[in-house]
Image (cartoon, rainbow, N blue to C red; front, side, top):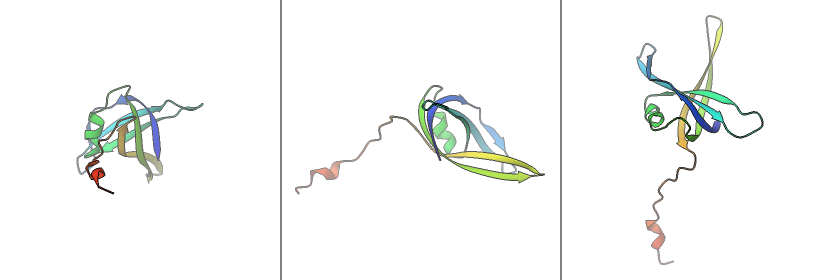
Length: 102
């Protein structure tokens, strides 16, 4: 799944679970559409470094997975980000192969 929007909140890092895993969350509000949505996405491990490069107000594209679990007859949702990039960010492309003679 994917959301394109503006960063409106970045939470501090916290340690969760029995494995003492670091977690950080980011809230993204859609800027397009008649009924824009807002999602809070969780980042774990190496993905936290990607969030630390963002600032409030940055336009981003986030790709994430949704997961539901049940514990003690309660249902919990988890949205984990697996890629987040600034919108309009230009990646360097290696065109050194482009000088071929044919």
